[in-house]
Image (cartoon, rainbow, N blue to C red; front, side):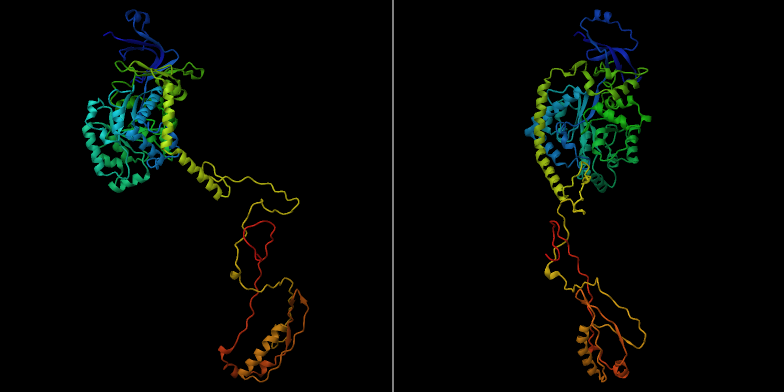
Length: 622
């Protein structure tokens, strides 16, 4: 068999090797593997072509060549219905009804064809994004979907790893399908976790030798449930069961203490980070500096809300403090570090001799993509890629020396047909997740809230929006009569609930004060009508007590009547009655027979409301 040679010349190569080499090197491929990297520019194209006339020459002028990305967490389940994730967080991600409906729909055996097409579309997108390795992390891949998609003829061009949450997938037929090294075991802790479920996972890991992924981004309820069941945090529990080792990966830990971090360091475990999920689902700012600089093997994935690995690297570079930021180390989190975890470090992950030619080409011929660095180093090229380029600048992708993306187009794939299928599947997923029904429910809730708030609307952050000021012209009325809206002025009072009271207008009453000149003189404060009513009772009471000498009261002088009220004239007269009353007889008076007359207090009447406009409620006279 004749060897097949390919020459890549004039390109700016980022090797990511142990020397962090970068520069304009010529790379020679032989049968899909790296045969030679000319660091000293001694390669003679004419001489080589004369000896190998069938060699393929690739001119990489105005392009950056580097190893392909690893996506260590690609969740294809929601890639075409990401709108459902808009209002989710780690607190409700596992219970969000629309997401559960979508999972039930695509995991059904009847819809295995839809799931197959969904995975195919998702992986093709990842290929155009320069991701030569994918770790599929969808939790709804059942045994039937696995048999249909991953066994037999493999449709996927990339290296891949399947995270199995269904224990039935880890069966004996995985060895027959050649996937023994492409399966991992996934664990999503919930409130039902117990020793039995963990023992079952431990048994599966012992039989398969697979890697173990733990989704540590769980709700507070699950964290408290684990502590209640086991009496300690989850990482500590797994460590005591020998489930933490160099093949263990902790995915997006949102709450981790120093003891758990020390356990991961001691066991040489890895940590998988999805920066987009931290920002969109954590609900609060997560400080991951301690994780990044802990010395653990850090790898990157898109997770639930991420779009591509290059975007994740951009987000991560903005999280890391600038004083500690090394762009080449960030890129290695998506290339070299995962190759160590998945056992591919001797196969791919850097531009070195005898490794697979898995390259991506960034086009920099655009004026906006001009590399302006004082010198070409691995760090300067890495910084330029992260800060200036996007996945749309990826023009070519090679896997094992074979072109799978040529000039931004998938090789041998009808992208227009793939786009039509994407739209059709997306519509089915939104229908399965009851998007229209829940949208109408939310709109109805907004209408009810608007009515209950009296027309006061809210913004997206649920803050009440203050109504604008209204100009009121009072030039004619002289008073402010309101905004023309209905207003409640009081509660209707029934007739039987009203108190009986005397309404007396005392605003114009005149009180005459008289000096008392004699200490023995009496003060007469009774009106003429009261005097006529009280005199018979006084006479009757004196007959009972035995008082004989009673001098009739002198009549009061009549005063002028103002507003229907008779003024009271205070007169002083000599005391005649008290001189004739015997003190020893007074002591024998029966107190129970004495009738005391008290004048009822006069209560102020309630002001009558002026009915000048339509109002709710009733006044006193209604």
